[in-house]
Length: 204
Image (tube, rainbow, N blue to C red; front, top):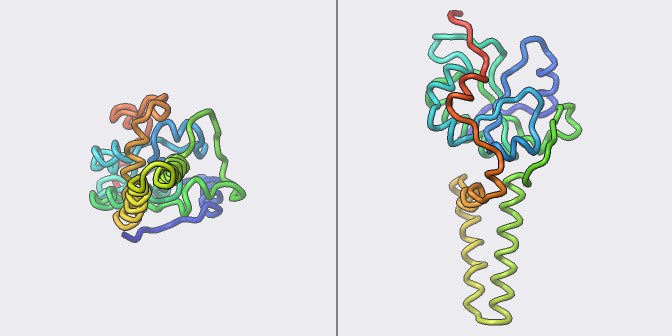
């Protein structure tokens, strides 16, 4: 699915304007705590998908019923993949003027964007690369030293990564997100998101 993309440097300029866009970070709470754009709001993708209609009405103009107190919505994740999925979810319920940060928060260095950094786990994309690489090396080592069947693990990981690219999903990320180090920060709830987002103005 294609979606409007906004370069990091362009977002940095727009955020300095009086009518700045609303920045929605769709990563997990732990990833958000580790690093996020100053002034952004954390609405993890699963929660966004569950309450898409309500959040869309809160974020911007939907079917002409409201107009936002900001100039559009910019969706952010680590690399842009999850933000693209979030764009599809919001587009399906009629959200207007949404874009995706091109390259995700990984594109922020050197762009002028203000990144707030804290303590927390690695970004999910980095965790996936580490886990996949470790499993591939483990399969090759077992296949060489113990049993040729060990190489099936490497083949399975390769197949999973290929499917991940084709389907734009990641089962390994879903598993890793449930690990204790990724659940050290409480996830936002529907109520906390509704309370935190700006109230849109009615009418045009």
